[in-house]
Length: 467
Ligand code: F0G
Image (cartoon, rainbow, N blue to C red; front, side, top):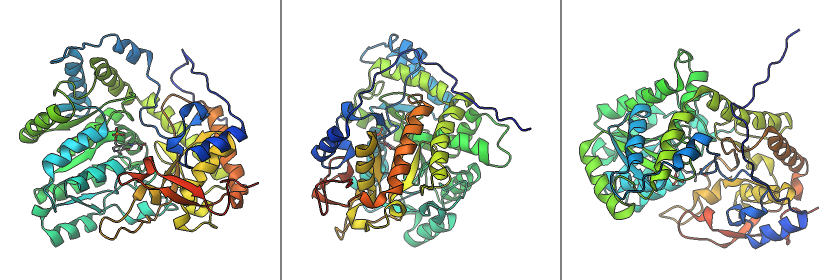
């Protein structure tokens, strides 16, 4: 008889943070007050917070101990040198410029490396990354493989770049008109889907042949390295740290939101090999972030990041982290819920278009489902569809990306399997009664990154979930 051997997290709980339970009536009132946008809910009214994996991880006792070693000198903090050593060891780039978070690094890189009118190809857009590229006059071009836009495709590396699309763009506009290639490890908007090492190598080789630099969005590159170890032929024998270095070694630098892989609540960095870009970045850093040895962070934040980087590449950590996401995903699949396949690295992405087939795209099914899920169980998720995509810069029309998703994002080392069970049960029950969920229309639409602050109202009634 085959026996099933379970695995468990490689940590135990030392301190707990009590959660507040709410009633359905309280949640109905709260979501209406929040304009049916889960970003506008106060967190004290949220039971299980799956809005994002960004800055929401639990730090280890070693990271907390690191906070006490904060050297809060204005210049040349000890913690900067520790962080620099860790970034060089695990990511391998020559120069480190710390920033307050990922978009701080995107701001520096975009400003330095994009001339107005230049193209910036990438394996699917990310909201802040693209916004910074466009702010300085760049034009984002999606060169991800087609499978990434298909929630049912089981391709093991849906984050891969399509070399034919990339080469066609280079031939059409000329290498001089391409600022750089923006390569995201574990593509967030595709559902947390990784790139293969082979594809990263080929993509970088193609760009470098044309003299085009490649900058990695390393936000979840460690999770990408884990998937390579798991799925790519010939890679199983390497450590996650070795694979991470091989990814980074192909590229010319990275922007990093350390709030994800690196297990900290705040922080990020730009890391590059090119001396001139580094010098320009240090100059701009002083203007926007702070001196180049702290970049908007306290010394203690940099220490927690340095320790977190080392913890993030441990196999047992990553196995439990991705394993928990997989656990939730499998429960939803068993319940018949349409989710993006394969199950992603940092969350489970529900295909809201399929979940709510009665709602047209301009009734924002993903936004509606996230609001309804909160009302049902106090679980907070996030829309990743048309609201996130925004409007076409030229025509002003809504962009309707192929994927209309709700993201159940799992913070690292925070929730238990029982929290995943509660979440799955709520989603499955909503799926069985999906016709009760109403569509939404805008009542307020901000100019930039509208998903953060937009407000909505249900169409045809007061309530989002009509019993
Ligand atoms: N790149 C990727 C792939 C991200 O997922 C994020 C943030 C950033 C860059 C920007 O980093 O937030 O530190 O400024 N993603 C968060 C999320 C907001 O919820 O997915 P940041």
